[in-house]
Structures are given as structure tokens and as C-alpha cells.
Image (tube, rainbow, N blue to C red; front, side, top):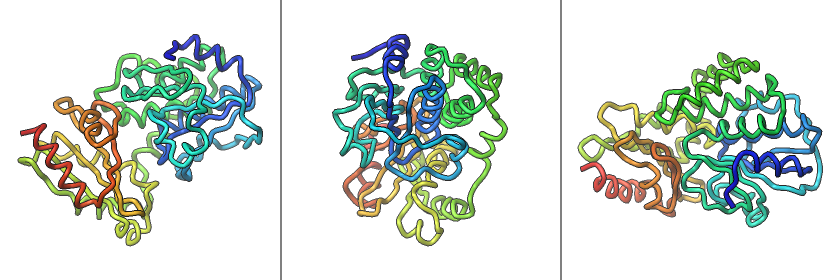
Length: 314
């Protein structure tokens, strides 16, 4: 059932022992939502904790520093920034069909939760900000840093077309609440590990142009992880690189999984709907940022995707 922010806050006020699920291969948006909401609930005197199927990259440690890992049996399960249950990764095995509340901004949300608070025209952390405000919780520096991280990373440091006047207003409110925008943006956008720097070089070297140079595809293989010392946790910053090439309308990063299958991330401008492209392969996402999984090799995925892209840009 779709609900509004008042109902969402009312449901959370009624509950305790709240488990918050974030999507696998976590990014700043889902983690900012999860830890921001968790901190607010704890501030209300409730028991809450955040879990993820994958290890959380070290650069996000400031989101949960100082938080105690509360041990309790959950009575209520919420998912944040999770469009479909399969995006939970291995957590789906345990929590599929058991999720009481979802706060999300993906138009491709499958409405798997009992209650869904969704708006496509905002980042997920903007929605969590509204929920926390409705709960009557005073946003402190730690909560503000969580929410600002999610908004900044989801909007490409406020560069994407998805940014609205409301986005800037909420970001300003978070700064007034103590968000350290300089630190957050430096960690998220300007700091690279040595292993990521090596991986980025290999990935850029693999980039090829297709469809009259309107499509750029970059490959990330298991061999690249091995030779660079990096891993899939460090690939979040790669996807936008493909869209930065002049004349490219569709940028694609294809990451090889350990089992030989792969995941494709799509980045587009307004001329192409990335979510519709991903949907052709069973995925989904946003109009300018989407993803899908493919049960084939990276090279086979390139052939399949190039064929579909050719139909869209030629």
C-alpha cells in the first residue's frame, strides 16, 4: 500500500526493535538513508540497527561511528532505497515477504513491502529527511552527515538533472544542522585509494565506443580486481566516467562477477531513458541511472547491449 510521509512516520512511532535493510553493493544513498533513519529512531529511544548483505566500504565509516550495534530480535523490518527484494542480495533469502515498510525513490519499485513511501522526484535521503522531520526528531550533526552524504552522492555532488530546488533547500537545512559538506564531498568525490586508482586506469583503458561514438562501454573483470588489488566495493565511482566522453549519450560499465556472470550499470542523458534500457534486461532504476544483471560473460553482454543501444541512438 502506498502511504504519505505522515503515515510513514506514524508507523515508525508505533514500532520498536526496527531492523533497517539497505541494498547490496551499498552506496552513499542507501547507507545515508539507513544510518540517518537509524540514528533518529535511536534518538527517540527505540531499538534500531542497519544491516547489509555486503561489507560496507571503509570510507563510509563516519556514518556509523559511535553507534552501538544493538542486539535484538526484530519486530519490524524497513527497507530504504531498495527497489526490489532481489537487490537485498543474500538478505533476500531471509527477509523476502517480511518487509513491513519501504522508503524509496525508484519508479521501478515492485511494491513488495506492506507499506511504501515513494517519490521519484527526490533522492531517498530527501524522503528520509521528511520522515525524520515528521517524527519530530531534532537533526544533529551525525544525522545531518548521513543524509547529506546520501543526497550528495545520489545527485553527483548536485550536478545531475534530478536535482530540484527542494534538494538544495534540504541540503541547506542539513548544513545548518551541522553537516560537514567539505569533509563529505572530499571523501566521496576527491579521495581515491591506491587500489581504486589502479583499477580506474585499467577500466578506462578498456573503454570502447560504439554506435557512431554515442555509446561508451567500460569493462571491469575479475583479472582487473586481482592485478589492481581492488574489489567490487570500489567500483561505485567508475560508472559516471563513461558519460563524461564528449558525444556519448549512453555510458555503460559492465562488471564481471566471480561466477562469470556480470552486472551492467547505465548512465545516460535526457535523450535516453536508462531505466527503460535496463528493463530490457530485467533490471531497472532511474531515467538517467539504472542497472541490470546478465547471466552471461562480459563479452557476450557487450554484444547484447550494443545491439539494443543501437536501436535507441541511431
